[in-house]
Length: 237
Figure (tube, rainbow, N blue to C red):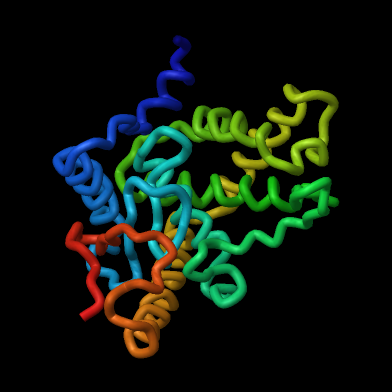
């Protein structure tokens, strides 16, 4: 394996076997340890569901497909930072992030029907925020290796064929170039500040839910515990 490929995988901590409370506790502990380096360990708006995918019930998940890793959690953090607190109402709900993807009804279901490459452009900016957040959390990342590894995933985006370039190799090269440009133009302090501001708005939303929602938690989309950033379970009293 070439050095850049090794570097691209050094920061990845994947856990494929999630059976048992000890494993779940270990996963949570690893994530909590990294979050503490961001200085957000006591933030009331930061909730985790380590073994779940994406963002739901105002909690960040650490799963992507079959793997659970800190990098997946930080990618969700990066989406929040990229969106920013100004659009929290439009972009966040108990059901997850709103991405506003154009759709068309085909046969018996809605299918993505992008007209631009805006979704990929958003992801490229998000990777830059992820890079800076992970660096702040103590990961030693090589920007070029990170960009190359991240660009590989873009081939699965629904607007991939709107990306400039003839063929997948040229499109991936374009994505690498853009990720590196965004990394260069983004400051780590700005990435962390935008995430913290998103969490501030989230904390206010959670306080409102405590007042207007039943305390038994039945309103949650996913029937699974949420954890605060210090590793303790989040419970509505």
